[in-house]
Image (cartoon, one colour):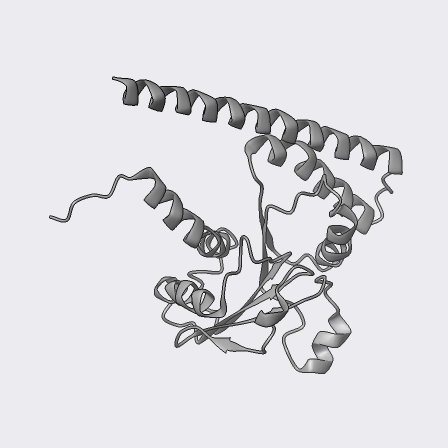
Length: 231
């Protein structure tokens, strides 16, 4: 049998390389899209994409995205993934790229805002099948940009899968912001600016607490390593 690799630095490198791809696969699964035998074509949008999380070089992107092929249902003929965001590197904006037999993708450098009229004019499906959003940081300065993206999604009830950096962020500002955005979109009530600022403040405090905890853990690990070297 092959020796199991337990080196933590290697495991972290593999996780960093593949985490966004595995997130897309898991998100499709959670939205009941991965194994739906009735689907012939799928279009997944990844808004807010950037080159330190979802995207790498074009060659790297091809190698990573072709991994999705083996998880697709046999009846599915094509999966197209759109990576869209203002931080998408301009050198990746080259039109549609083929990653494998059934998987293609393209990159676009702009804020994603669903436009039903533009979709109809382009001849594509009116709605994407789902969105996979990774660590949007709704409590940060990106809030207004994400609001432009998410309100049309809420209005059209497009399925979406969202990840956060940690449980505190998920259960705190992210869940609250999404809840209030949904209410605003469907005219239940409009959230006051003071409430938005309050949610931002709560999110920043959570981030500070988490960063302090991570620093403490790093210091504790360093102490253990120093003792091991000393012994």
